[in-house]
Length: 394
Image 1: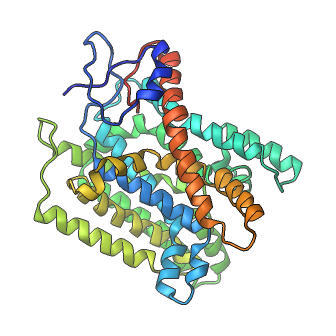
Image 2 (image 1 turned 180 degrees about the vertical axis):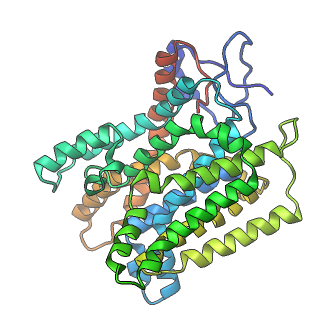
């Protein structure tokens, strides 16, 4: 399968003008390919857009406007679980794209180049906005955010950019991926199921404690499990990696995707139904870790099912573009959305600023992807590796 043409340092600027998604161009055999060669899972690219918008709707508190329909309000109130879908999808896609990591350094450079440019842009936009934080919090929060460590210090996890903590968690995932991939690829299903059963007992502990005199400690444990702390988010990623590795191992050797069948379709629809039911539930905090774990499994069914489909509604060009800019939508939602909302209320105080804010987020995310994110990604990888890199750098 042809891979992408390398881009010289002089060609980065012209690339930003001529970039097209999925442009197959041959690459000289002498160039070391640092990009995976698997065919893209287009439907999974598209659902990243829906996950990002689900989180945006949650942060803009859309659920408060539909309280007359309790199930819909609960569904919108579960928008924070979009990050759970991101985490499990991240593990699945990485395992699919990287059957093995020959160079951990190459992998880490690729991931840094993928996430940090737009992440740094989001922080810059947050810094130039008026802040209500105490100066000491701004300083400490800035240091934590710039170093991608804010998820480890829960009191300041959202000090600068409230959505950026997930990138701190993702950084941990990327750090451990080259280490856990060989273990998960060879792990027997029974061993993995046993480990998941042990984790299930752990997430049920807060609920069990709620019926004892340690109810307050159970509530605190549930809050910690649902917080930004990376170690309690790691299982979601690990599950995605394990299933992604097994999915890849079952693919035919010609790298073509297996056709959708009745079994995969059934898994997809059961996953969608299970996810919908769980998203419409609003249990007490002590049951939230269990809800997150069950959603992880339900999302996996959806992901595995969608990996096999070629529905035009999810695989067309515009949905691929929407999926590509989903990262920008997510990480820029606060600095761009709040700024656009403030400007709109200044122009039209009597109207709701939600729609103009969302439009602004979409536009800036697309502009950022075309003229900043991709060229910056290529440049960083070229500088840090000393080699030209593929057009669609990972």
